[in-house]
Image (cartoon, rainbow over all chains, first blue to last red; front, side, top):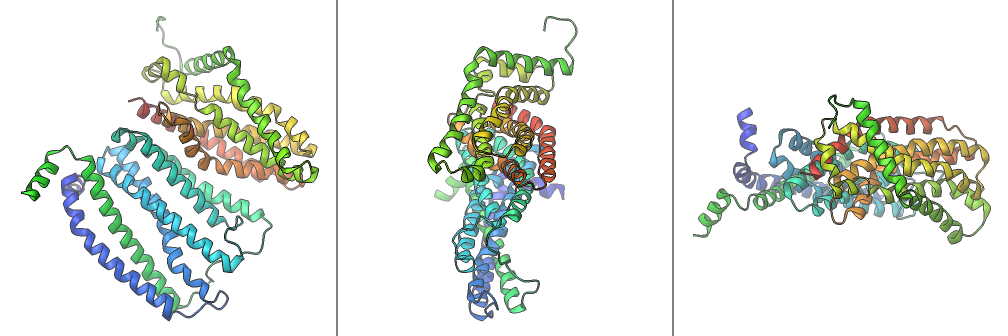
Amino acid sequence: MWNFIQKLGSPPHFYGLAAKMIPWFAISGLLLIAYGTIAGLFFAPPDSKQGDAFRIIYAHVPAAYLSMMAYTIMAVTAGIGLIWRMKLAHAVAAAAAPLGAWFTFLALATGSIWGRPMWGTWWEWGDPRLTSELIMLFLYFGYMSLRAAIDDTAKADKASAVLVLVGAVNVPIIHFSVEWWSSLHQGPTLIKKGGPSIDAAMLYPLLGIILGFTLFFGALLLARIRTEVLHRERRTRWVRNMILGEST
Amino acid sequence: MTSSSDPSLWEGFAAVIKRDLLLAFRRPGDILNPLFFFAMVSTLFPLAMGPDPEQLMAIGPGVVWVAALLSGLLSLNSLFLSDLEDGSLDQLILSPQPLPMLTFGKTIAHWLVSGFPLVIISPLIAITYQMPVQTIGVMVVTLTLGTISLSLLGSVGAALTVGLNRGNALLSLLVLPLAMPVLIFGARTVSLAATNDAVAAGIYFLAAYCMLSVSFAPFAAAAALKISNE
């Protein structure tokens, strides 16, 4: 087991392993997304209250879930990188940040589009989830700007790791405080997404598409880690050998 | 160190506070500028939104809190910068005293010259915004707890960005999202006080957040300082 982890941490080994894993993640992810899209958009019955507008959850829920998941991955890998000085872990955190930011943006955009027919407005400050997603997006921006501002990769790794850990402590607090704040807000009555029970014809496509998005996210993340590793190791022998080996 | 016995933990802590306060009082502009900024931002809102007393009363708590947040940020950038420039930051890091204790001392000194004066003059702003008298006490309490938390959160941001070119804008980008719980609870609690609602929950939350920052922020700031100064 320990041997396996050590091997995983070695950049050339991981670079090769990731290349083999990407197609599996990508193909299974795309298949599940295709199933979820078709079943969710065409075969699931319309919602009793929301009509067809509810179908945007098939993009919204997986995006929102991945925006949180990406931050969790960053916090865990940043912690591993700081504690065990594992360079690959820092590369994972760096590669996950832009993906997380995009999924957060996607969750915000789809949430806002859903809000238009449901609440009659593109943006509703009273909804705690929308507001805390927005703050989440700012956290991603802060992380990426800090990385961009520091030229030395090793230093950027450690500084951004401290930031993401401080942020991880704050994310639950932010979420809780935004919820408290909106409970005081005397706005229009909100319609809570999803009821206590959801029909199986709606549920299975949703579960499928969440898993599909996650696998697809995994494929994108692995591809990004590969380029990140290649960039970081550009002066090492194994990269030179690999490139020379391929070109001749 | 010329003396034969090493200074104790508290002596080191107190020495840092004393030194930073002395430096600040030698340059009164550093203390006064954020205060003027605070007063001026608070003046902008009535000018922009009109002098309607009811409207001013409604936005008052929010304005005071946003202005406090921004003026706190204004002075944060210089928290470690002058120490970096004259090399005393290296001495702080090299000293046998634990670095979290020293950064905590620096942060306390920063709060004493930036946050504390702001708490003192905030009742003036509150009166010009027609805020009811019973809210002023609540505002002073929440601002005290909130500005301490902000100084501590900010010390982590300042330590991460010290010595970077675009440090100042970056610092705001890092600290502001993290500061939102403080803003939410601070401003909403004062608003609740204005309508005679229960304020204890908000004050408890701010106190808890303040304690959390006191316990963790100095360690994060010390780690960040070591990384920035490698």
